[in-house]
Structures are given as structure tokens and as C-alpha cells.
Amino acid sequence: MESIDELSKLLEEIVRDDVIKGIILISKEGKSESMVILEEKINKSKLAAASATLLSISSQIIGKLLEQNPDYVLSFTPNNLVITLPVNTGMVLSALIDREKAESKGVENYITKIQNFSHKVAEVIELSGYPKKGLFMNVKNVMPEAKAIAILTKEGVPLIVHPMEEAITLSGMISAIFMISSSMVSDENSDYSVIVGKEGMVITLQIDNDRLLSVALPKKMKIKDIIKKLKEAIKESEKHSDLEGST
Image (cartoon, rainbow, N blue to C red):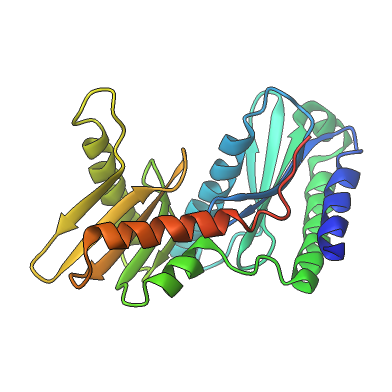
């Protein structure tokens, strides 16, 4: 708990810089782990999901085009700059910056500052061993027979997909099927969808407002038993929000 408190203090300290409006730490699964956001009008959950999505897409683009990993991603709006970067293999950091103030003092200075801050965050996370277990590992543990596991946004952007082959295409198709299922009955959202083949099936269900979980399995278990296990895995992953906080 000491290292978790240290991380919270780090986040609170960096927003004392009047150029930095907020800081958010997200798992690559798209789950907010800790945040300090000073601007009330900012949609915190949307920023969290968008940050993980942005880094996921950027990693795939720069990987395919340049065979590199992204150091950071800059997103400019008229009033703000968002700096998004990987902290380690499992975590993402986004900083919300006042664009006008940053440009007057030098955007490069704030990129360097956030990069240095991410290194400190990575050290604390490594010492704490956090997160102990994420949703992906929970699903893998309760469904060892799964042939594929995908965590993606509702828009069809892959966050974590294993195996990775055709991740973007498959995620788009999975999202489309789920959204079509959701629209088939007016005023009712889809609980889950199942594609059944001769020897296996693909089950997709909603994790939260922004993300979906999809699992490909052999046809050995009853669907209701699989859904129960998957929902338990989702619920268990939510219990590990020890770092969660906002102001």
C-alpha cells in the first residue's frame, strides 16, 4: 500500500504545474487505474478509454510502417494538448496540457517532463508489482481452453488481442456484430452475442460503456456457464482498482 500511496502523491504533485490540467494512468486493457483531473468538464472515463485506444492504434501503425514502437503520441485541440505514452508493457499514461501555456514555454519541455514522470511511475509500479492481475489474465485463468481472447473498444479498436494475427480486422467485425445485435430490439441493449460453429463458438459481451470482451472457445461448455465465468472474471478485475482516484 505504501508504493500505491507514493504513486497517488506523484500524480497529485505533477498537476501543481499550472500548465498540466490532469494526469491519468490506464491499463492497456483500457481501464482507468488512477487519475487527477483538475478540469471538471473533462469526461474522465472517455479520456481513459481513448488514451489506451490511441496508443494501441499508434503502436500498430508505426510498427507496420516503420517497424518501431511509439515513444509518445501528441493530440492537439484548439485549447489543449494530450501527451500519451507507454509507461511499461501493461500501462499507459496521458497528460492533459494547457496548449497555449505549453507553447509559450516550449512544448518540448513538457514532453520531456511527462516522459521523465512516466519513468518515475514505472519504477513505483514495478516495486508495487501492480497490477497483480488484469482482465486478460483473469479470463485466461478461468477459460484455459480459450483459443483466442480479445479486449476491444465498442468502436472495434483492439486493445489486447491474443493471438495478434488480423487483430484490427477481427476487432472491427466483432464490434459490428455486437452493435448489430444491440440494435435488433428497440430500447434494449445487447447482453452478449454468440457465434456458433460446428466445433466452437465466439462469445462477446460488454465490459463497460466503452469496451467489449470476446472469447473463442471449443463447444464443450454450456453458454450460460461460460457467461457466468466471464462475468466473474470481469468483476474480479474491477476489484483490483486499488489505485483508482480522481479530483
